[in-house]
Length: 130
Image 1 (cartoon, rainbow, N blue to C red):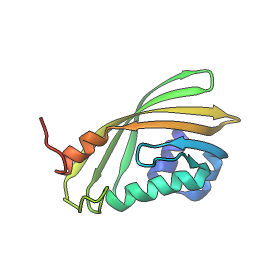
Image 2: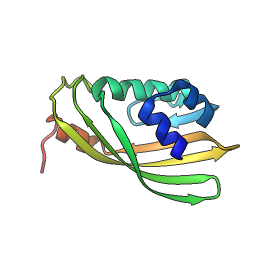
Image 3: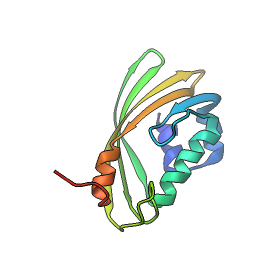
């Protein structure tokens, strides 16, 4: 998981191929169809970096059972690009994400990600706050 966090924070394609299986399947709320392999993950990172160029993920805690890892992250960044049609606001964001990772042969073969998209939308001014 530490190498994976290094990958998502750097976007290093070589590291992506090291930690993500070519056959990996990712379910992200931003995409209606699953994404596949390192290229699919790079697509999600590209979307996030386009909207939040300084985005950083901090791994807060993990729970591991067999080949499954539940991971809680904090995502921080500055909204300096378009995000789901919302123009840059310059607002700082800090939200949580709960993701499940499935591993085989020391690589990620699957992920189900649940970022706090409502929190992101509220923090960039695109949704009302309570």
